[in-house]
Length: 162
Image 1 (cartoon, rainbow, N blue to C red):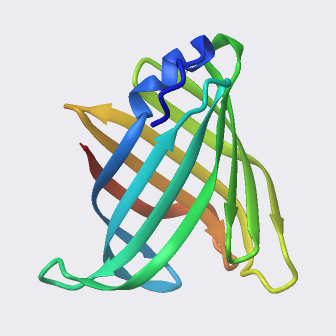
Image 2: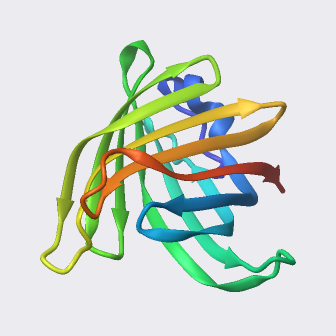
């Protein structure tokens, strides 16, 4: 987190600021279920957006790291009336624009635009729900990909660290 003063527009999502770590579960009709570890970092520079970085890794049955999984980065822009615009980029050739809303410590967002490179996997839509529950960041992520309708893909519980 930067030492800049937080922009007033970010107040509704200021609870996200910092580094979060934890674990979750994933699955999809086209893959086997799995457990993963995750680190998410939200930062700011005094302007009306948060920077966002996420990385995940596969966990074995004992909770040890097996190998890296997905990474994504982007920006969460705060708008009037607790609305959000989120831009996420993936090194796999996918860019997503989400539109969302903040209600207390809950954020719900749905893709407005998905763009893919010619070599990216077929991915058409996403829906994410984030919430602060007992001080932990919980989230669920549904996606439409590989010919499947919007279906549950990931969920995790992350604790604030540092």
